[in-house]
Length: 212
Length: 212
Image (cartoon, rainbow over all chains, first blue to last red; front, side):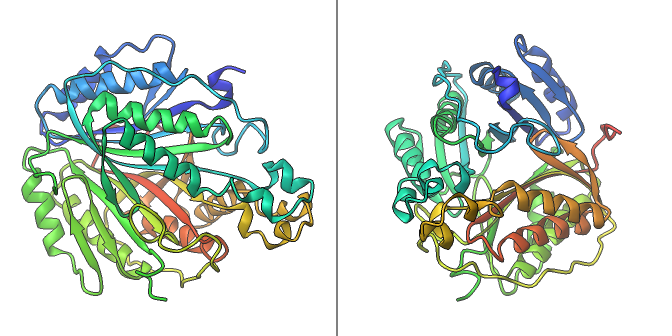
């Protein structure tokens, strides 16, 4: 199954707080290498599908290019795996989860701060043990918060964890390190959970001081 | 249990594509009525907690006020219920889901287009039937896509459904109608699912034509 068939993709909105935003956004999109990807921009956001690695390279390149304008910007990013299609998932729930290699991204020199949330969309029916009627014990390692806590520990190891706000983990570091951390947690949960989504709101060149 | 104790709240990032963004954003935040709410703005986003109705009134007021500047803007909005706290949920998983009344919001006269995603974070353990070992049949009505499809049907009835893009439903209508539709789906799923999150990316005053 190709990444596209499995629904591996992203949707992101790049917001530039500058009256010259059209030039900055279109320039950043046109400069980034989209080989191996399908990219569609509409009035709300840009959709990208392809391999995890190429998707993240593309998004990193677009945001870094816009950031080098010096303008304050934010990016709302959604990464999804395991639920292709539009109105409905084209894959039925409960197909085997499909893993992928962790991604590597070279540092960009652009500092980013982000709020990050990870959503493993578990279904009772995909738990083979529960299906066999073995009862409550089978669910103990599949509660939806466990992979989230594990991902937060990995962000701490990666050196980009910067605290936890309500509903989101705060990341701070090179743009590539921030996106790498979120993407590898998303890929990691995807080893065992079919439908996994993660959202980031990234802020760059903000004039507001960090809360710390 | 108060809405705050149950973790009812929002986090939103208002992005104004205009070099005068500081004045527009701070003006919109200061004009909105925050009574009954706790509001904290940091360098990435604004956190709001209180009742569902007051939270949505506040967010609608802030975005509508910024939109009246005429500037192009986008807002990344996260609504969450059932998982209070920061690093960890302060409520254990599997406490009873707590309902709330649907909200009403008067129209604003501001047209908004949005990408909307709804995430019911179900856990196998909260399914009492599965816990009793009754097997696969117990999960058939609790797959995570069913409430999402139902919410899309409700958006169609509300007249704001505008198609489905990958990973998101497209809404188009008065800003209040768009936020009301997303919020009432989030509240509705919350009747039976403890931890429910919904994300919207709202675009207003965009110079790009709608894809239709």
